[in-house]
Length: 454
Image (cartoon, rainbow, N blue to C red):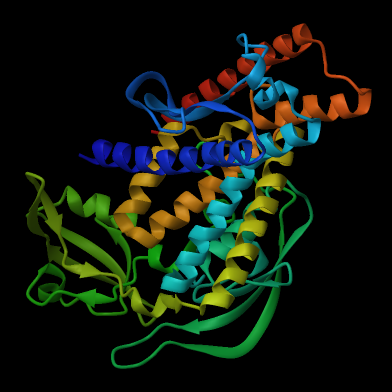
């Protein structure tokens, strides 16, 4: 079921992205007087096709990993004398540049539109509060501690966990220090609201030895930082369930279960899932004191499986804030967000090519499908944010100067402007073959990376 959900979300996301990209080419070509023959979303065998009143053949094809707009071109087939002026190859260099550039630009405009919708609609965002620190890690050695809220990275304010993560991603592969400004965050107790103390401190994280696991590149974890919501501190207890009966309290921090480390929710959940009906000894920290509590784990049936149930959960509310803006402010923030994502993508790709970031961190369609499914599962706003981010990446990748991509065509046109004449067709065809091999090899490597992470 998860696979099917991921696949559906992936096809919807990619369908929207490809449609907008190709429509950018299509719209500008038509506006500039070039005849369009085919508009296709997808490659391979057509699943649906129809010739419109405008004479364009509209196609929905089986492989949703791209699309194309086929224009009238004398290099591909004979052209009627009365239509020669509408052939792509007969257009000025600047007209051809505009048509090719329109696809990536459409992706950037789509990202702005999606971010605009998100900012107008409002979103619940997670604030960056530290739950667990590996004392031997980069963050631990710098003095970052439990319940610190990170309010700035390298002098730039961060409000959300995503803001902070993106700032860290931009520093991967570099040397020197990352500067954190932190404040003490007092997590809400029963009947109280969370508060942040006014005392701020600045920490310097030495990243000379920073290594990010390319197979599972969780940037925060690589620095030794775990968010409070990952940390096994009890926020809610279900009355009558195992934890309640055993005397576990709100605010208790789980340390281990039968001697097995369980201070992170994901670790605790794995252990509990296999402990239905068993009596276990749970070690907790309460007011700084370690206590060992015997607990008979309850059970619950999920998707036909009998899984353990402790009856505890996190209290999410203190760690979320609502971000919502007016129409004008939302548009401004959407433009800024898109620009910052383009800037970040440029830096990351630069580091990939320079070797500062391992190519093992590249993701392919499997990872994208998983991300699409997970974001769609969270909600529409999360899915829109995911699609916006992928749209920026798609626009950027298509601008790379690789023959077969839009950027490769732009490279040819720039050379034509400089030389005063186009490259020989044989040279262009050779470049196209090389470009295809590069793109397919990179795609194959990215897919290999995807499966290595499963």
